[in-house]
Amino acid sequence: VRELFAAQVKTLSFLTYLLRGFTDQMRPYEEIMAQNVISLMRNCPRDAVSTRKELLVATRHILATDFRRGFFRHVDALLDERILVGTARHSSTSCSLEQASLRPLGYSTLADLVHHVRKELTPAQLSRVVRIFSRVLHDVSMNMPLSMQVTAVRLLLHLVEQIVTNKDPNPQVGRDLLVRILNAIIQKFVTVEQRVDGLLEAVEKESRESRENRGDTHLMEKQDTRVEVMSFNAFDSSYDDHYMMDLNSHNSPASVIKDLQLLLRPMVQGMKTLIYYINSYSHNREKERQRAAAANEWSYPLPSFVKAKENEEVNSATLKMTQGERELVNQFIISGLSCLKVFRFNVDPEKDPPIITSDEYKSLSSNHPPPKYYEMLEAFAASFTVLESFNFRRVLAPNLEFIAHEMEKETSIIAIFKHLLLSSGKAVSYEVCDLLISFLVEHIDEVGVHGDEDCESQANSTTEGYNPSHSSLTCSSSKRAHHLFLLFCLDFSSLNKFPKNEIVLRPHLQKLISECFRRSTEGPLSGSGHYMNMLRSLFRVITGGKFEESYKELLPLIPSVLNGLFRIFTLTEDDALRLVIVELSLTIPARLSVLLPHLPLLMKLGLIPA
Image 1 (spheres, rainbow, N blue to C red):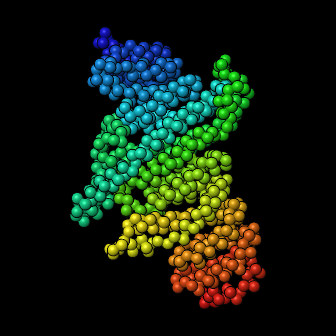
Image 2 (image 1 turned 180 degrees about the vertical axis):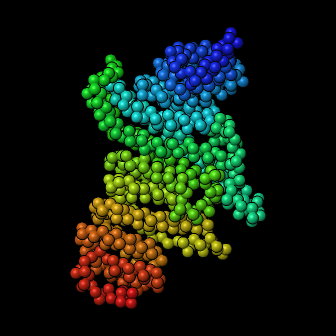
Image 3 (image 1 turned 135 degrees about the horizontal axis):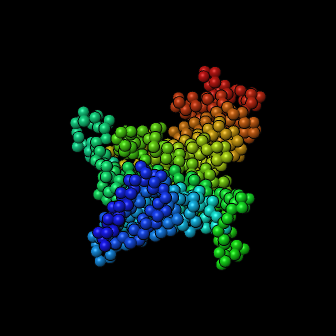
């Protein structure tokens, strides 16, 4: 029997080669061929692993042609994993392993079919597809190769639009499917996050050891233009088929980093679409219902045990976002941002520069982060721009402190705020400007921490009584002060592109300016630099934009501003700080008629010498 079955599969493999050359002659047998393929899958002996593998390969060849239409009516059969990949005998360990090796090929075949037939799937079939490929994405015991996990992510994201337009009268069915996809992808972020820090340390250690072993200066220079240190050229043609996406494997840490980049890219880029459809599900669902009713299209009947007026789950689908969904998005912010660290490393030997250590990276990343990393940060930020005002604030506001804390480790993360404030439209910029200025004003006391010199001196100090923990704390505070200063300036600069943001900035102007002068004069003058430069950025924006309402808001503060500038000008001996104060005197947001009574004080500030 096994020989006869193997001969039938060989015959099918031969027929697949005839499909392209003799399409017209083979067309009448389209349905019969698909039916016989399903029959072969049902009847294939459990221990005939090689025969089933050949059968799956032949099926993939058929699905790559127009003859795939014959399989559309057999989707339910192929969604049964017992038919698709068979069942293994529990008594045979070797057979079980061989059976497991069929899973990637079987799920790839199923993914090809689902991709082409997704518009015809019923809600029940969509649910089975989501269940299968969510397991593929997470079940490490199946030893899924990376390519299959990437395929699972892409397929789940491609189903989103079809789920939104499903014909089930119970709106909760589609909403639940979308949330299941969201949960599956975010839980994958959580899984990857647990391994990222260890992987990055291993990559840096491997790179550092390789450079130290080279020793020769000429070879070190040559290494800067080649990426041999990480053995990237070790990849062969069978890599995607045999490499198992297990972060505990003994593969090179750099190869795991490369695989993670391939996996995380579609996950991050697809979150915007997924969050949009969940947030706007009720609106899109109502539009689809009206369209279907106008076109007199048939829809699946509501089950008899479901009564729309009594079932609270049906009513919950009319919400923008539930609390549970917002918690998932919060988890995405925490885990997703940590996972993006893998894009700091360039691992393509042909297109990217070589891997660098963390110390070298920090010296370069502040102004010029790697292009891939910057691109993914922007994609991460864009995921939240599809939320309406209420949910946007509920999601972003609680996480501002976390993002600011991460900036202390990674300055490039400021690209998230830059994208939201300057590149996401006036509505999003308005919301972010409001949230960010409120957060920054609460932490304005931390902007004046000036520890750069202290950090350097303490790091080089060998005297007794040196406390490393105190040095680390001082350096960390100094970094946070600098990052908060950058966020202030970025928030102010958004007014140049979106003048409407002045409305949310105006209520904070008096407190902001008063706090800057109070903290500049109360503390050491070495910490006044950030405050004065921050005011310079603010005055430039208000003066350049000619915001009349802000002029009026600042009118009562003009005398105290000038007196504060004069006091700092007379106390400091820093020429750079004095030049900043002179510029502030020249750019005070006020009309000339308002400044004329204070002309003697302006003269004392050194305007004539300037």
